Length: 81
Image (cartoon, rainbow, N blue to C red; front, top):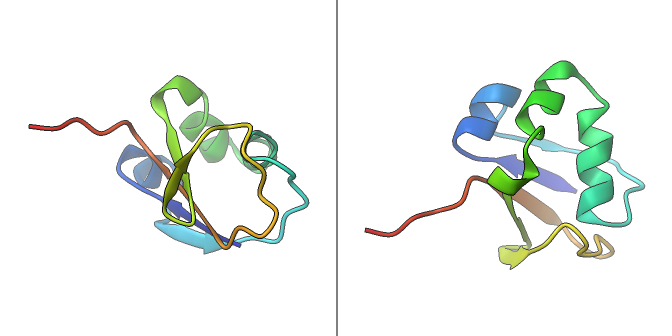
């Protein structure tokens, strides 16, 4: 699956995207898997209240299943103006 990182998440992780093989069943499982990879991921995902996720370009929550998902995007909350 392709994982995309935007804004300060990209800065903390140091990559705009990557392709992963994962056994994670949900977004929350994927986040835990990523946190365990390296300190930069642990830092990026330390406050999930400040992170939003989209699965195949549709907003989702941490409990959303990953079965059949091709793309996961993580980004900070957006504000309008």
